[in-house]
Length: 375
Length: 254
Image (tube, rainbow over all chains, first blue to last red; front, side, top):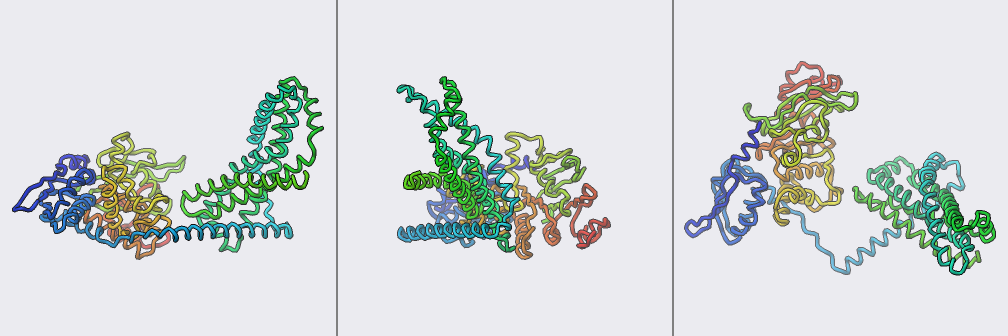
């Protein structure tokens, strides 16, 4: 049993001898030329061989593997007019095989495009991606309107499953983050306001910022991180495995089956998450106010006096649009994924980054719109 | 080249038993693989062929029994001994298992970069030759997603060949390939076994492939939960009296 190991150990590892014979350089290889030894000998042999025509003497070579044969043939090719002599039957069989493999036609190196053409290509691909995104938006709009006209065709089970995954399962995280956010906001704003003896206005400040801005935004970040990336990874894997193509061929619209329930879930779940986060934040704030010596009734009175219904509704409407954007971007990233495992990772990253950037942009749009509308 | 009868065994399996929970796949499977032969593990779907292969390369632990490769107990070796053993075997996976973000050439270069002291240019040259050995020279700079299934398998063989291991394990080399590509792959296996003296362990259920490449084979069976035949596949086809073996070789429903 140990013969194999023993053989490798007892056969002398390959040595290189350099001799001069009638003016010509002769490189004699002795022993067993295997991969590790070929790697060690490579630089020296190539240096000797590059000097000019040499004779590679293989008569005392006992065994050779394909890496060793590659080395011998590379050395032969390096010196113009070099020759190989004395290879035994086993060695020459390997050499012949490797020579064949070495001489096989190689791929033509890709010509790198000139700058202008490269610019053109990236503009073209960018334009294509833009057109694809617009087409996706169009398809999504059509399918949403179609559902309004024929609501019975909606797959309620799917929508409920996604509501559960994007919504109920995110509740603990949302409550925790909201509560901590409220605590931090109250604490931080109490410090400067105390200088003016104005801590009583902390509930107004925290309440308005949570209702109008931070509630929807933070809920959006949670949705993008938890759900947008999951949509992209799931749909990305499905398109890599050709499941999406299979659906298309079966005459089932992937937009209706895969995208619509997810987008609806995103739209429906966001106001709930946003409201939950806001409420948790307000209770965190109330706790801090309590520690500062303001009873709960005072806090509630402040809140009811200063917060309006339009603050709440403005925030919730915004949240719906955030949900739409995050879910649609996640699905689009997944369906547009390339092939291979890296494509799925790229799609998930694109979904999270795209989702967060889009909600910030949308937030800016809403800020301007609300200002114009006087809300 | 059929291995000489006195050639030493490079792999020895002793009383291997595989089980998942209560479900026994096979028990007491023992065999030897001789240097330079093409050894085929065959059997119907779900009989544990691939599990047996994974046991030999150290991925699935056997319930009982031992495997020796080149004198090393696969499941007792650890650290340096295990690494030295892994360097001396190559595996072609069922789907190629190439890294999707690298070109075929880079895939083949990876074990060379990891385990040898070759410089980058020499490494690329060696990797190109390995791809040439499986007839993929021209596809060297393509990504795995840009080549066909048969090319993926051949690239898998090239990567397994990277370090010129004395033993190559191939999992279903011809499954899902057209007869011509599959025959080409079989021919390549025979060629490499002959000219490089590599020992092959091949898991397959493709009849044509078994008869074309196999020097010796063992057959596993799910019903019998073990090995039901061992020997030259052509002789098994002609002479076996075991009903399952006969059905397998005659393509009958058992």
